[in-house]
Amino acid sequence: MLIHCVLLAAIWTCGPLSAAATDFEQRCLQFQPQTVVKESQLARLEYLAKGASAEFPDNDPSCNSYKQKVETNLCRVGLVIKTSNRSEISFELWLPEQWTGKRLLSTGNGGVDGCIKYPDLVYGSAHGFATLGTNNGHNGASLRTMLNNEDVIIDFSHRALHTGTGAGKALAEAFYGFKPAFSYYLGCSLGGRMGIQAADMYPDDYDGIVAGAPAVHFNLLQGQRAMFYNITGAKGSSDYIEIDTWKGLIHNEVLKQCDEIDGVVDGIIEVPSRCQFDPKVLLCAGGCDKRPQSECLNKAQVEQLRRVYADYRWPNGTLLFPRMNPGNEIAATEKLLAGKPFNYSVEYYRYAVTGDPSWDMSQFTFDAVEVGENANPGNIRTYPETLQRFQSRGGKLVVYHGGQDQQITSFNSERFYERLAKQAPALDGWYPRTQTYVGGDPKQASSWECR
Image: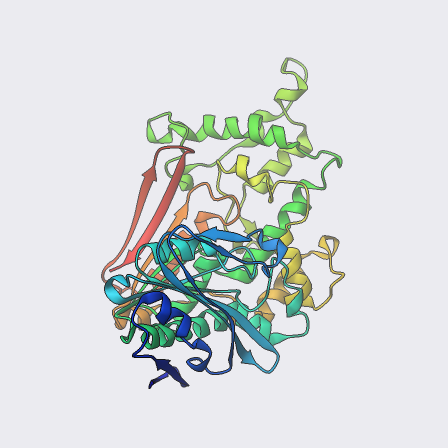
């Protein structure tokens, strides 16, 4: 048996290659990935033929994923990798039989969860990528394991992805006998933030990054999303605006005011930044106003709309976070406008910022936002002034953001782009551009790329 060893990112890795393993299934089942990656334990090793289902019986129920059909023959590798003496990550790498172009793809997570995105692993492996994902340092949709454990926060911020990517590169080389020719990253929302953080902190990890709707300036984002509950009030409270009103009366008025700005009435707000929604027209004026109560709003509700659609500012008037996307009202009723605390923010303030599991939205103030921003747990802010190192080594970055995003305003991606452009005016080859996608539900995306 030949032992193949490489040094990657200060981790000595060794793995066996068996000359007797002549077909793919046999080679998979004889692979010993736990000998390749330092401080790892084997959690799963199996061959899966195209059409078979990968099963996840130990997956946290909050991940809502128990099996996934695969679209190509592959070797499924699962490891638990120690990241410190009190933290670890769950890691999966799907190695397709046909390794097209010797490419590696790392995938991200979403929300604040620690759920491997198995559909992304299916997508990547089906297209010939050796595709990996991690649980980002914790299992499930809660951040409770961050309580009094900075190492779990560091994993969530950046170390889990970096560790998983290093392991994936070493394992792909040990399994196929070749180093990956190219390494890529794909993630959206929290995963988009992870991609930006990787470009900033670990510019050599990837040749190309796709970062969708990135949750950059993460601490202030959690504050901005938390504030909606204080504006809307709880469901059923005085002046609470019902879900049907958001989806009907208010959404229709937003479209009425902003849809035809581009000269075409098509149900799409082409350039959201040009939409300055004025809610005053929805005020039940009384007197000659003959509209029924269901077709207008009281004064307190109109003021609520003004605050919802305005930039979120510190008490001194400086910008804290950009305004909500006009036109996102239908989807936003699921979380931001639902009349209940935004759960991602609650989890973050409880377990990463305050260390107080009893913290609730009644304690939310500008002071709480400031505490989170100053603490910057695990260096999670993710708001670099430049990505010069990534660009200089030839890295390519594509960022896209839906113009009706219901959780992370696309105006923040525009602000981030302007920040990079101001600090690095010599970044020739950075092109902001807008594209409109028509078909199914109306969607609009703004993107910029480095090429």
